[in-house]
Length: 316
Image (tube, rainbow, N blue to C red; front, top):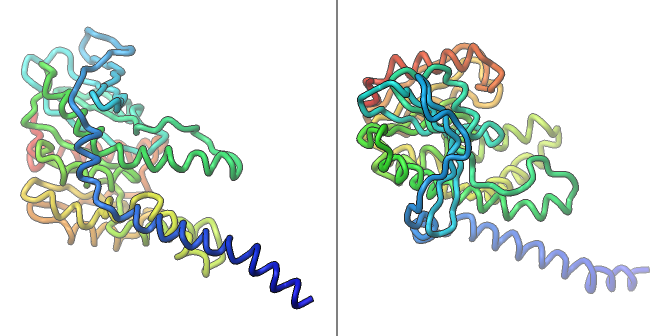
């Protein structure tokens, strides 16, 4: 019996353990490798923007646009703007949740003297993943979408600079929830973005992921290992929000937390504010975490954005 067990361990289990260990070590290395050259190459040069649908005329113009780079990178945006303004408009680039994407622009209602450009993340995989096989095949697509997001934001800025209605000197980025790490990185990396508005986000993404794992799994021993694995898969060291928000200064940063946020603890919001350089402001909304169907929270956030537009340099 012992002989059989030794054979199984030596010839079956040991190679599997070695392969898993090698995969984990490679993932750790890949998660932290510098990506500056990749970002520059992937951004490429602007080819143009194709209007897929929309209303070209009227008081409020709404257009779905596909923006293309020479690198092959494509990003879809929903651009909503005041169609009657004769002055160039300040622009907010919005990064929301993955499923909201470009539809986030519709949450702003009447934009009235400004423009809102909400992005779809550059992800080509299935919306809902089922089974181990589909999960494994989707992971590379999801990881690629994450590192394609910063060059996609810069490509959107390239496109905005060519639009006659956009004021290139007043471009800000809004990151909401899962969009916060990407918005913080984009603002830190592209100095053409003049301000950042970070909504219901965390300073420590690893701890944030661990909290989400704990909400779905009672096995405490698994919380940190699973969270760490997810953090590496998501290129966590690159999208370190606390580190990136500090690099935005001296451009203004507005951080908004939720008093009863069930996903992001108040200390995470306060730590994010502490990490940011001056000028910075911290505001709070009542209620829970932002969701598209929580209209009162969305309206409260829009009211704060209006109140702070002069601080952000986005005054109409």
